[in-house]
Image (tube, rainbow, N blue to C red):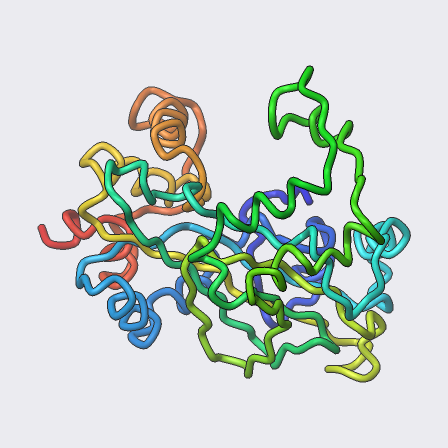
Length: 310
């Protein structure tokens, strides 16, 4: 998944679809032209404004996600097919996950709802592979986690959620863990695979349980074609500007110039310090790939509204 920046995404350049990133999250697309085009669409911004009931927002520097057909001959695709332990087109119940408290949420000292969105470039469904969600699960996160944990035996010698902790977990429940729908059905919830038209935006509470569902037809023959992407989505988030400190806003401008991501669920204080350590204007030695002052007003507004207002 390593990419040499800036690669980004170019619709008419197939090499940017299949080279360098493997199959899945495209780590170099956070500042490509198409991502910023999508982020600055009035409808996208209005959707987040309606969700938050706030006008002034900043955008996360997130990325695209693609799934390639087997015909692409991509090494990442081949490895994924060889290692998958669940049937294509069927939802893996263990991969459904929540981001509750991974973004802002209660870390601000009070309950806070954070929102995320996906926008498919082409129609996505169970055949092509799509995002799956569990409606209403954002209201029952502790209950779902408790039901899931009851069927796993863990080793207390290892820190919770550490690599060793995950490696030493043992399934003690009935059937297969990938098919354990009871953690949702016992609460009256039903997981489902979305069917979304190209260009539509699905926006949801980040606490909602969700995951990707592998294409029922990984060849692409019954979807968009064997010479076409199975699926391509923009992943994007926005949060109220009031949550950002002046130093963070400055760091976001520098991150844009360095072509660095600003994922909504990462440690923003740590990212801020990394950016200040690397940028040449702050004494670092990493060269910028673009100039924030030359960005469009629409982009500047979503990165640092205080700069755009000057």
